Image 1: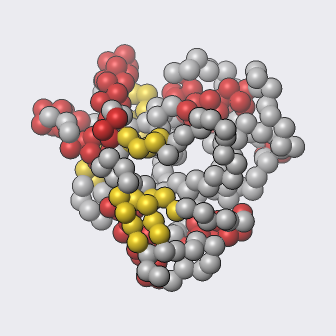
Image 2: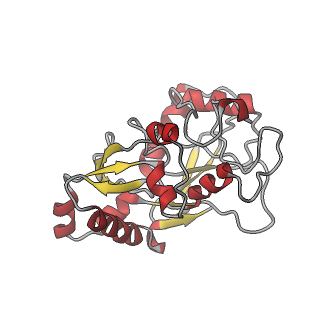
Image 3: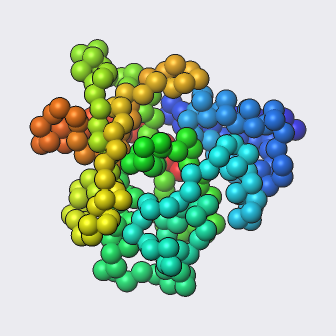
Length: 247
């Protein structure tokens, strides 16, 4: 059965059928997945009953992976998962929930803000792969906003204004939005800001999109309050329901 993709979101998101990701993939299937990501930005694969090893093998078939190192307040001795997986849970290394006031839990609450994964790294990840193992009885949706469609909806004056803007991204900025500022000097050095363009061009399609994230805290050459207010307004415009898919 050939791989099929059907759009299910308002202006993006593809539902994929005809493929078993737990088995080795052909070059044609891998190419079709990359093409699907170029077109739909988010792909949904149903009922893929991965083991960790199978999920990692699928991930690596798409390209080299980004190791999950230094992206949380967990110390290496506290890691619950190998660094080939990003642990965004509320569990400690013994699979017990963090205490309510645990710094690691409070830091992780920042994941609930609108963000682009690893935009706070010099070289951000190309894809994020999420696998649901246990579904909550209510809530727990993950939402995606289509930044290319949001860019297309901007007026020309705004497009001209933002074309060459450079932002600084850091998890320190995103956590400060929630009042978390409890960082050690070592953590501040490890999480120091990196620079990213506000407008990016897709290398395959040539389509422009916004590169927004709660991690974006400054715009180079702008007063900080003005930059923060502008980025807040731009994010609000880009996350209107017409650009958002909720899974």
